[in-house]
Image 1 (spheres, helix red, strand yellow):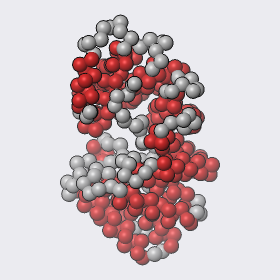
Image 2 (cartoon, one colour):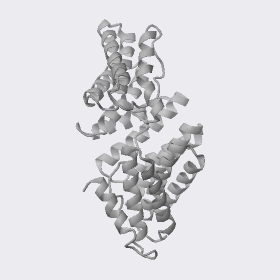
Image 3 (cartoon, one colour):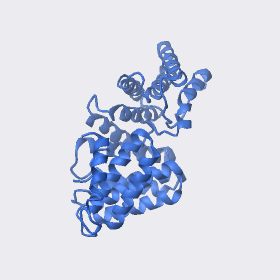
Image 4 (cartoon, one colour):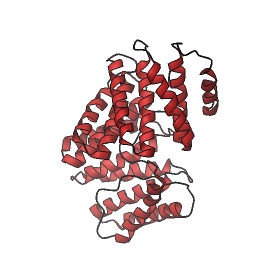
Amino acid sequence: MGLDSEIAAWRDLVPATEPEDPERPLVLSNLGYCLRARYELSGDPSDLYEAVAASTEARDSVSADEPRRAAVLVNHALVLLLHFTRHGVTADLDAAIETARAAVEAAPPRHPDNAAALSALAILLQTRFRMFGRLADLNDAIGYGRGAIEPPQSADDLALRLANLGGARYARFELSGLADDLTAALEAVGSAVLLTPEGNASRPRFLSNLVEVLIARARTGDSAAVDAAVEAAQDAVDATPDGHADRAVRLSNLSGALQVRHDSHAGPSDLDAAVAAVREAVRIATDGHVERSPAEQPWQRSTQSLPDLRRARRRARGAGRLAGRRGDGIGDAGPSRRCPGLG
């Protein structure tokens, strides 16, 4: 059954359940979950607003002894996150965090929704850190992210949660410069890639995240890391078809990795390949071959000898910032989308 059909089915079930029916909060939460998934695909704000209404009613009506209470709360928290992302109202993010904390309380260790609740709280705290720079939020995000990878779970879910944890450790490395954080980030994101088979839609995103961490590792003197970064960047490009909204920025990543290797080894072929990659990225971003290009984090350092190439890479990235679309930036991997959200 497709997403549109799932939404129609859950909508039909809402009026068929009485307000006091214990199944009603689960029906509403499923509806909100599927609307959230469709909003992330289409960007239609009416789906988001309906998801907020449905998940809010589900949160308010779910009983304290409902076994899936935590899942209902997680769904609502992640809907509020999207509402915050669209409108920038801090109260939405704060409410999402408090809702996720309640989900964690409702799903103690060994509860089937424990990992999902911990992961949601980690994502939300990391989001608040990125917005406001509160180190306590980042430290808490790392703690909850570690907890989220401990319970038994599917390979897809584990890979996503490892990528999120790697993003948090990398963010702290950027602040502290501590080698332990960089090593942990590399292990987490590398594991996410290893768990994700070729053909999986998440693999190119994880590879792009890995490129950023490997380049940081290369700048600590690890000569093998830069070769691994170029390989990962090329794999990400190869896995992204022509016309895909993320192809331009992944070509830009490849250009950046090649630049770093050129600076390290002074190989002319790397410089030529870097120029070719960024020219293709600019062509895609400016010729209308994609509707939106993603806004990624900027590279931490650019070579000073190639100003034209640096400007071209910024140009290839720039259109996505106008679109307000999240891309392959480290730590951006959100929760998996499967509808229905509750059993």
